[in-house]
Length: 128
Image (cartoon, rainbow, N blue to C red; front, side, top):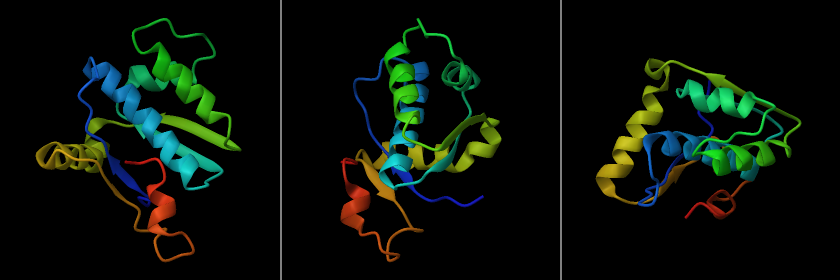
């Protein structure tokens, strides 16, 4: 598997770790949309969030707005799958999150796309 892009966003208004996981899933789907991808697999280590976005039922939990937005964003893709991975498989994401907290600012990395017809400005769209 290849990392296409990485984004770290510092939020001060996220009310729980549960909401932070849902927001991370929403940000992941937005990054892939902005990169113009049609087939995506979103991996996350929060089984609850993954199950909620896979469910056809309306979510009625505290993270309902995030789940609604994720499902809405999903519609732009030809194929969009959500998969649960164990936290050990998600070490890179947790390392990036730790780095973002240390420097206290939003960052992104898109090594695959820069220099291949897509400019950093296009990648940066809506990310800061």
